[in-house]
Image (cartoon, rainbow, N blue to C red; front, side, top):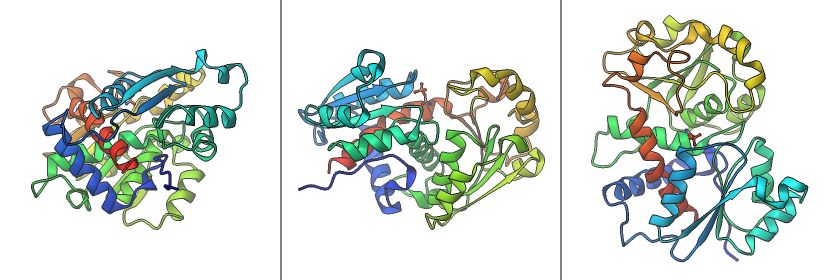
Amino acid sequence: MKNIRHFLKETDFSKEEVDHIFSLADTLKKNRANPQIRSLNNQSWGLLFFKNSTRTRISFDVGVNELGGHGIYLDQKSLQISRGESVADTAKVVSRYLHGLVIRAFEHSLVEEFAAEGSIPVINALTDFLHPCQIYTDAFTLAENWKSGEVPCLEDLKGKKLVFMGDCDSNMANSWILGGCLFGMEVVMCGPKEFQPGEEIKKLVESSNLDGSYTFTTDVKSACCEADVIYTDVWVSMGDESEAAKRKELLSPYQVNLNAFKMAKGDALFMHCLPAHEGEEVSADVLALPNSIIFDQAENRLHVQKAIMAKLVE
Ligand code: CP
């Protein structure tokens, strides 16, 4: 019986496999509906969302279709799971119909349970702990900008300094810590001490034996000095709405504005996974800089996720 593979966290693929995904994404970007690459031909993939989404939902739906498959959007509110049917039973049942499942959820344990109980590939499309599809896409986007050869690859990222500003105890921060260390980057997390990286991600990195490193600082100047890329995300994530006022007060010194950006290298890039809250975590002038690559990131979600799906069904 074929071994079922899942993509739940950044380290679920080896570095060699990540390079293969980047190469495939590059090919797919040059020819979106490549007739040679119909990896999901006649397959049906479920897109199960417990949270709102624009980029992830649309790019997966389009991506499944461009690979020859059929995407079915599953709003959790209309499934029996919202009326108490167990995750285990739901996973077993949908595995009888579908060939793969993309899930956006609150608890990370829910996507792990779907993967463990079902018998089809599961992709983590964001949980409160990690957002691996975003990080693979962002790494690919950086490699495109810094590539030394024909095809973007992880070697292009080696030793580059990425500064993550803001809530360093969030899913995007966790994913940059884990992904950046896998990719061999120097990751600097910069935010208030109240939002420093948590124990769970520290333990996961320690147990993963990775090449890169990460540090945490509260000091914006030392963090941004000589940075190759500055990254930020919203201060109030989905599920954190009740803490909005406290978060905005503690995180306001960590806004990515021109003052912060000028401390980085002259050719530094600005990244944001979007949606952005202009005037909160990032100023309007930084969002509009020529070195802001936010819409390339958004576009590349499509190409990289197609490559991830193709890799899972190889
Ligand atoms: N960046 C991201 O995951 O966007 P959506 O929430 O719109 O999917």
